[in-house]
Image 1 (cartoon, helix red, strand yellow):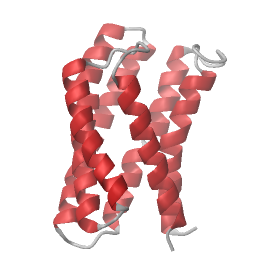
Image 2 (image 1 turned 60 degrees about the vertical axis):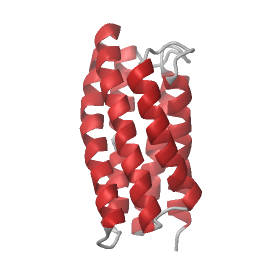
Image 3 (image 1 turned 90 degrees about the horizontal axis):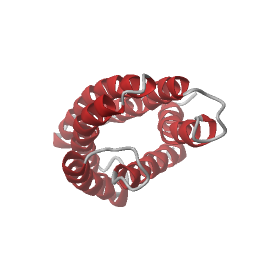
Image 4 (image 1 turned 30 degrees about the vertical axis):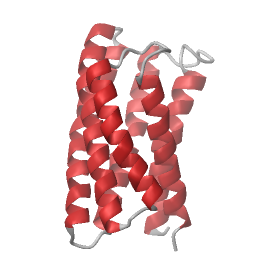
Length: 180
């Protein structure tokens, strides 16, 4: 299998499957999985996103763009690791701890998203529109989630930022799969 196929699949798995797990199989969906199973499976599947990010930086040439993207990967990995702690609190039913940790880590992940977008823009790793949207989402997402919080109700700003982020991840997967 080609390298870009593997990377593209990592992006798609990270962008599509957690949505399906939460919407279709969770207690809020078809009620196939418990809350604990939903959080565990979604956390494991989301790990494919930092792997895909890392794989894209590995093919970049030494440049400022690669360095910015590597900063974004590092920040994202730290945020994802902590995000798994927030998911564990959610699985245990401790919404207060999940929201407190989640606010810190989702907003931190948006900082990583900004640096990735900047690195991808400088390196021309993805189309300018995708890189620009990553940078914009990184800034807006940081402000919205860092200040506004990450409560899980339907009116939460998290429910606006995250679908846009997931769509960008899916777009990056499709672009990566289509590369020669």
